[in-house]
Image (cartoon, rainbow, N blue to C red; front, side, top):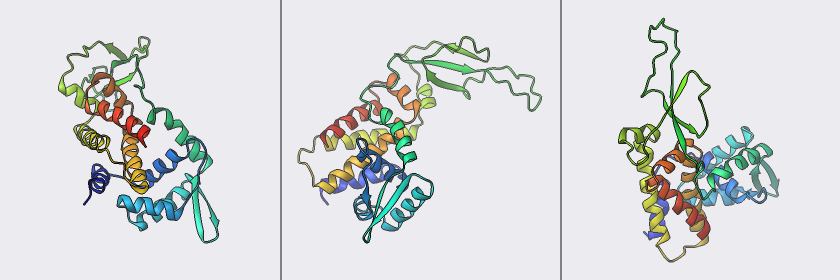
Length: 244
């Protein structure tokens, strides 16, 4: 097995991949400048190279059409697929986060504690602050007028481990670690693979990053942990997209 084949297999297995979502990544990536159409043969060939069976691709394409994500047209015996108007709109909305080179909220974040007001069970402590259950991060905005929340300060240089785990779960951090290692291997590989390998590698690296980039907590983690695995993977993904 070649190093590139092993890289593709490792990327395909580093985390759960939903075929329909991978197709959206593929179509969206290739359609940023214009809404490109792809033949069913090309889609199946690419995904099969990644390790996805044709039956799974066929089911995913049917679901995407049924849900309004893609349109189809038939030319001769070949069916072509492209993002629908709604699919283009939803994909465009994600571009800024997925392809950005810098942190999403460079001015930082504030830690807010939410005050519970649950009287459903006649609880006597209806206005208590549930520290661990309701810790969440939100963009740098003022909530001083919200009587149900309070703003807390924290030292970015002394962030406890339990707090990191409240932002990003351990499984996601492990995935980011593995992706960071694989990205570094590709960057230092030297020899560029063939076109089909390149397409597969680009889609997989991008797809895993896309899943992370669309979560605000990812950007909070990057801001808090500049040398953390998610931040490092983000930098390498941007470099790989430029290389390919």
